[in-house]
Amino acid sequence: MEEKEFVALVDQLEGYARENPGAYKLRVAMLAALGYVFLIGTVLVVLLLVLTVIFFGGVNWLIIKILLIPLGVAAIVLRSLWVEFPEPEGLELHYEDAPRLFDLAKSTREATQGPRLHKILLTDEFNAGIVQRPLLGVFGWQENYLLVGLPLLRGLSPNEVRAVIAHEFGHLSGKHSAFSGWIYRVRQTCGHSQYRSGDGKGDPCNTGGL
Image (tube, rainbow, N blue to C red; front, side, top):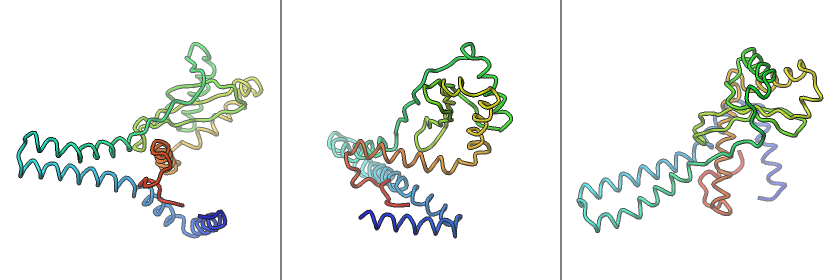
């Protein structure tokens, strides 16, 4: 696709999203799920084939050798669904290292009804953010990291730091971004799959522009 065609497609989709937000969200969800429906369907078909062969042909060395091929295909498909997301970079802090920061983060999380924090990481950036790391890949089960830059802590007052952290929790409170987070994880999974396969050709997650 040429750059002009891509820009025109993006403009068209943005206009459609503004006019029909619900329909656009449903469309995105269906496209995101399409690749996984195909992959899971492939595994189910392979398992059905294996069970059919065993039921009618019994179990012997020849049957086992024949079934190794479809079982190998199923294993490859299942492996493509499992993507490990690396931990964010930073120095992990413990309560005894920065008790005021931990207390501030806890009170802010409770006030904003944000998600539970699993780790606080210290970075060298003048920034702060919350990173959700899915332990089960596209299926979620989040591990939440609060990243706080040392220059930020030195340059802002405690109240200003609280406001920054509250802003980050606000993005996640009430699971307002759950759908966006799921779409992001699907995209990240497809990106990892493309990296492993080389150029991503034939990747069922590669559904084109959303």
